[in-house]
Image (cartoon, rainbow, N blue to C red; front, side):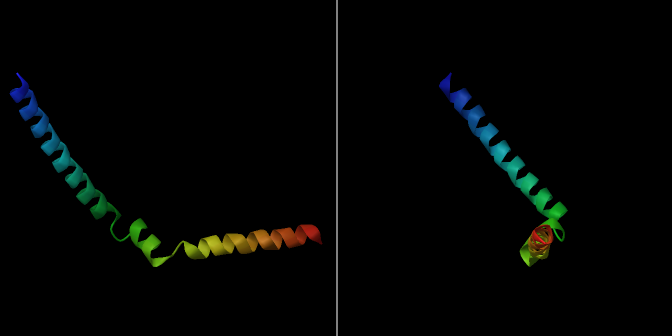
Length: 64
């Protein structure tokens, strides 16, 4: 009885690994050239810096 269960478990594990690979490939294909590249190129860095600058300006306005 242990052998068939072990065989089923191995087959299930292989199927899950294949599924995970497929999902990774499709996710990379969908996100390629978009969100991932923006992060790598640092496109969001300007937004963060801009937000900090705005916060400083608002703080200075409140003090005056």
